[in-house]
Length: 80
Image 1 (tube, rainbow, N blue to C red):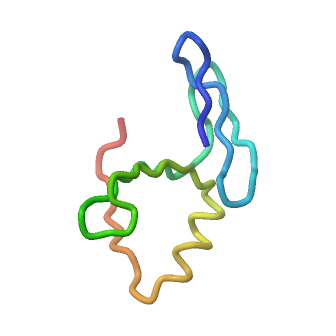
Image 2: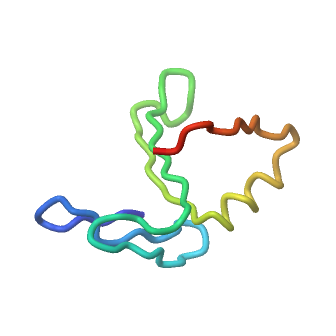
């Protein structure tokens, strides 16, 4: 869950699963987190809904352990 100030700057990020408040300094998230925004479409029961959530890195890792098929992981060569 993200909250922005009146100036549009990121103020707070809270993990939707565990409720942990993540570190945000001067509008920059300083911890690993997954931000997901998904617009559901025609063939779902959620057609027309857009879901937004954040997971801290620990909750993300816990979620992945539940997958029957592992995610593809690719190493990034250049870090900006």
